[in-house]
Image 1 (spheres, rainbow, N blue to C red):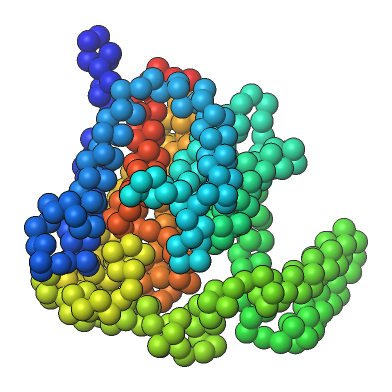
Image 2: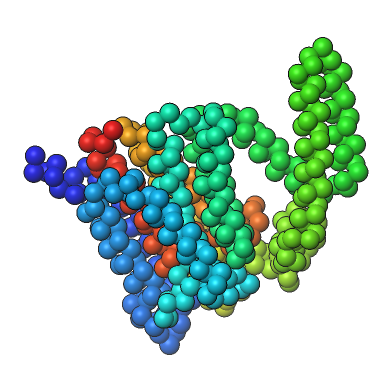
Length: 419
């Protein structure tokens, strides 16, 4: 009985060990990425790697505090967390500091708070609370509309900063809705719209519309006796045409020039190795030069001579690839995959629907960051400026990912007592 009353009873220590391993890997690679020979000690608090150590220690304290709290607290106060993050997202638009074209940080002394990072766990909590309520079914139009509002509201505020990368992260929560009963057709339609988006940028609008007309005519001819199917084809055609013109307008009139250039480079429309394609090209050179075992700690030439911008944040993985090689990269990717599978397993073993839904929210957010960030460094995804969880430099991102993960660990530790 005494063990059951302990706040650390039934905690998944394997996940905590993986969390610590990723944090330590991040700390050492931040040291390598911004190494200063005049301040060589990894414990020097005047450097980014010294500050990252402070962030890691404070993250551990945050995790400890969460484990000491009552697990019911997170369900009860999820609307409060959500409301506070919305207020912060509004506040950053008023008093925020503009860095790199994004007004995404609130200055607090020498520290900068990024509200968009904390909006992720708050949105996961409120979404889990709503979907776990009695008589709420994802199949209902009302439920879909409310879920969309919960997700799109912080997304819209983040887009105003504008921080496109952080905003796109929220789209990952569609996997939560799918797990809770959303039709797989929505995922298929989403994939088709992504494909159509790419085609709009690669092919003339006229040719694309003509292709849709031909496809629609063939479908109608083959199913001419099914009137309801014909109506679906016609409506789908009209929506697709409207989407084509919307994408074209947004690409030419809403996206900023550097965002258009990044998309053009990714799609191979232009070769801009000295401009928007510079980061990715140098990143691929760094990773490729690492070979099997890497060049060794603090011996990466691309890393030491600052050939890759933002190497301690968005492009931290290329430091791992250069100095630790294929083996080191494989270990890091393996740790992430193990963590994601473990989180899904934790979500599935929950007795509480709130905990299960929240667990899938955690897995979705972490997967999106992991997949897109590493994809950016090897040229498989657009450069949208999102951190690699637990590894990239930054207090706001590390704290928000820690909160996201440790809330799940707390809910899981009490799963036998929560229905």
